[in-house]
Image (cartoon, rainbow, N blue to C red; front, side, top):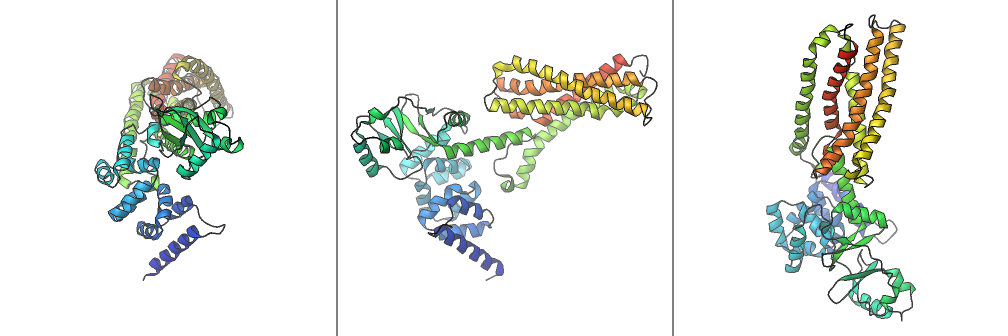
Length: 458
């Protein structure tokens, strides 16, 4: 046996020992999955298959989707079927959601008829719907039960799952009436009826709600689990906080990637194939490159002005970068404010007024610095801008006011316009806003220069 294989086997055996141990150093399944990330795929498969069935079921939901698929495909069909049928519905849906259509069809055949139907039904909902997070492991009670009867019923029929902290009261048709924390069953007299400890307040999600709606409700009501109903108020399942946190992280990751000027990745960066990564990045880069070519077109339109006053070209990078930076700042602020529900499309006039004022103020600050820079260099004889240097400094001053104001206005309004057309505001990424302001900023700059410097430099 090679040294590398021996090392991997010892490492694998140590992990297995820690996971199975009864002492305080026992690893959580999530920690085992984290350790697996540092192992070759063959070693992961060998280590995973060495665990008991119960341990495999605990570890599997925490693994990366690519590793999950490799594991399932490496197993005998009987073992793969047992594993996929044993995990919770939300974890099963998350696994099948990452598969291609052909793979999904083949692996659905490994499920029991009931699990296959439940999984297939959930996969029919949009990817961003709350249905994709639903867990069908929940406990229900009738309001006519006494607490003693309810406790006995739960002991007999409710398995120990992550959703068992909250019990749901339903009527004969399965319609949701109330949610009751387990603590109320423990802290109240056993002779009391369930309806006596109901507070008549139940926060719930609709199965057609988006994941963003779920994230917002969990934050607003500080819940760890929420029930999900259909249009007829029939209890369909529950959504837990851990799944919502995962969805929130995925959403933030997608928005960050889009805001950087690229398509969002389907897998983590380190798991994304090279050519897939290039493809995700190339699209936006080509669009932005072609858009930046308009900058050369704009400068070509003002070539006479530049040839007469070459000094104007010295400040082009300063001018366009200031506008682009301010536009990117505004876009970041507005996109985030809309994401956390601080702003909506109806607030566009408030945002416009605020950003115009901000743009003018920031423009005056930057313009004053630009004016001071030209004045200092001229007075200290570090550079000679000619006899009309004061007009040149004024051009820079007023150009920065106009360009910065336009940058902040563009950066704040473009996300709201996209949102009104039901497009992702994150698509108005910083590079896109910066490119737009680059082109329009040149027009503003040379137009102001043509007015102020007419009869002097021009």
